[in-house]
Length: 235
Image (spheres, rainbow, N blue to C red):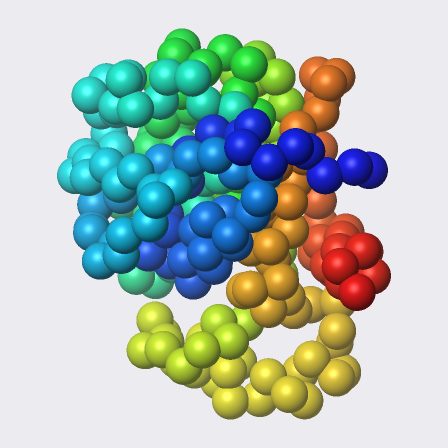
């Protein structure tokens, strides 16, 4: 595939303060084919860049006020979410499903030809039968996006996302995974993906817009293969 001409893509990014969204912001700003990045979030990023337009939005339960910011967008990367155990079950559903659906509603209204890249997760269950709340809610959000009539929807289902840079891990499980990561990666390479590699793939897919209408679901193995392809492409 050829890289799009520089200065052609208007990209909106939600969740730029997260581990994946932060790298996605960096790579999007560096990408020669990106003309503008509109970063929408509840916390300030604390950076400035000629390509960056930062929009503060405290309540994703109602995105009507974002109508102007979401106009004339070419691609969207949606990384907003919450860790299992860090929020109650009702709150987890609101963040995972309701916020996604509401943002998508306004985005599609103002930019009907936009492509939507969604950070889902391994095991996401669109049937709603999973006993794991995270899987049910991610699956519900996926289903809503797939029927929203976007030009294209790209759903990413990563396994364990390795944060790369040290951080305060959200719970004991993540602290253990980080501690054993070198061994875990060696024994189960298809169950991990570094946050920076993953973000680079999301930006690449968002920028390489497709002419045909389509829906794509990328499992962790697919994401890893795309990382390797990008590494070969860039040398």
